[in-house]
Image (cartoon, rainbow, N blue to C red; front, top):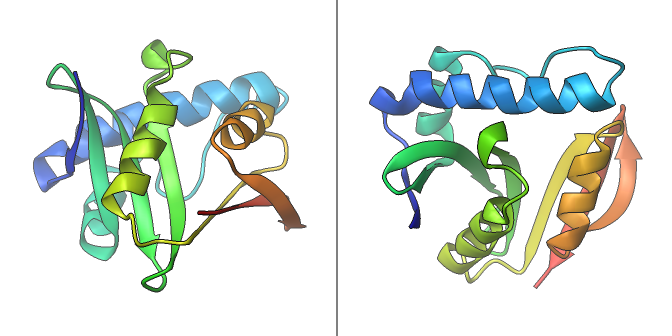
Length: 149
């Protein structure tokens, strides 16, 4: 059973481990074997800080943390999907899409979602397009995607 719950300080280390595994795997395959991710992706203290500064949910499957999602509320009608990550062992099973649907349900008043993702991240581009997002621009090596509801 898939469930989203607010992340808490005790989850920080596990979320950092999953985020590191997820971003490193993606980067290794699509970024010329380079390993790395966005700011703080491998830091438990960064995870704790984000729990204070944005809407941070852990993704649970049968009670086990398998990912996370960070939402930055810009206004009542516009939100930034700051980050979504799923343990590589659970990817390609439709879980990410279900998480997006759950988040959109939680924030049902939101009319516009946006995110950025590395230009080299082909797998992410495909995923976000499948979830109804459209590429609307490029900025500093990132592609900007939006979705209007």
